[in-house]
Every structure is written in structure tokens, then in C-alpha cells.
Length: 287
Image (cartoon, rainbow, N blue to C red; front, side):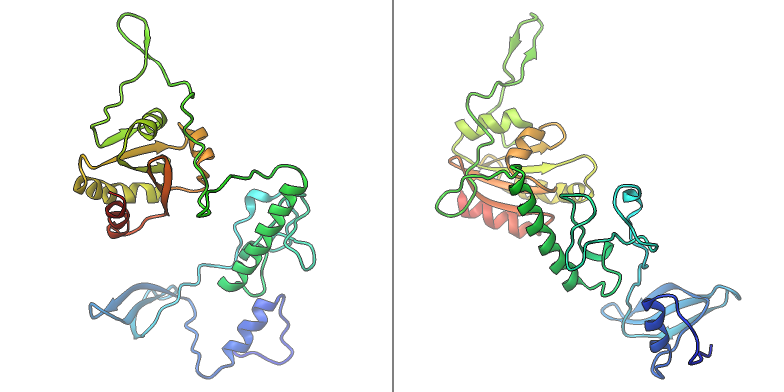
């Protein structure tokens, strides 16, 4: 394909493509899709491609691969709520990340069609967080948590006077559910509350939700770790959709999150999926 000097482009992205295509070190394979990659067991060394017109397969020797996942922002759910431009990017105020809706701020690639870099996304993310905090404070909506001398939030999630759930026995009378203080594995907010006040063991709490993919990946990892410390710790699983009040008070903003409690103090917290050694090291530290 040949480009002429008078060729007009509709946006900056096309202009950038034009400049790159004129680079003699760049070869563009038109009508081509990747099929597979090959390697020697350690490093990438080739890629299999297919021509979409002839359906012919061929191979190329390469040392690197970069996935371009597209330039269409996933903002369709905001149509009719936030101002979007013709490309679907969220419009923000000049030199700001504020949108047309008070208290709503946009950061990252959904509002940046110029740079689309991790470092610029992080910068606008910081701006959005600061402006959101300021907006919440100005409207009396910010919630603060007391901290101890170490700066760790003091857990207020397990008050002793919290009414426990009731279980209907065969007699028709209500009775408290039984929590075995000698057992290692437990489920639910009431079990956590009981262990928190009555057990001297280290308590490891996993906050998860049924729709959380990483939570399912983490489950076998934690099961193996807990097996190593049978009868030495308590492991409590909390479904944030069932025990939302506890999760909210604990400051859980994403799943999976693992919190560790010892003598009513929260001593550690891990977010996301970590290697077994991370959980094992914390447990051994507080046994």
C-alpha cells in the first residue's frame, strides 16, 4: 500500500499509523491473523499466521509478541448517563477527570484516547481518587475508621452484642448455632464473631463471592495451606453477598481478600491470589 502526502486522516490514531507504515523497518502483513505461537520450551521463537483471503498458513521467526486488544472503550453501559464522544470515550472537563455527573470521575483508557499508557492511566486514577475523596468529604459522605498506633484500622466488625442467627430445632424453639472451637474450618459471620471473641488461635478469614473467578482459583491453594496447620488456626470463609455487613465494616472493596486476626487485632491482610508461601509465612509468624 502506498500513502501520498495529500492523504487525509480522520483521527490522530490513523496519522500515527501512517507515520509507522513509512518506517522501512516495519512490515505490515495485511489480511493476516495469528494462529499459534511456537517456542523451544523457554523462549518464543516463531508464530503461525493465516491469510484471511487465501486461507494459506505460513510461519515467521519472531522473538516477541504484543497483543493489541483494540481501541474501542468499553463504555456502552454509560450511554445516556455520561457524556461520550463519537468514539465512545468518556468526556471529562479540561485538565480534570470530572464528568458531567457530579461525583463521578473517569480515569484511564475510557477517557484517554491520546496516550493509552499504564503510567498515564495510573496518574488519572490518582486524580480521580483524590477528587472522589474530596467530593465525598464536601457532601458529608466520607467514612473514617479509627486506627491503632501502627496505622492498622481497628476492627469494628465483630461486636459482642450482635444478635446471632437462630436455628429452629425439632422442638420448635430457637437456639444458637453451635460453633466448635476445636475445629479448623468454619463458614459465615456468626462463626467468625464467636471465634473472634472466644478463641486464642490465629484466625484466617477469606472474603469471597460466588461470581469471583480468582476466588475459585484461590480455594485449592488455601485448602492446602490450611491442611498444614490443622488444629492450630481457624479458617473462616465469608460470602460477602450473604454477610455483606461484616464485609463492608471490614473495609472489603474486592475479592478475594484474606485477613488475619490474633487476640482481636487484625495483624495482616492480603488481596488477590498469592503464592502459598505468602499465606504460610504469615501463619507461622503469628502461631
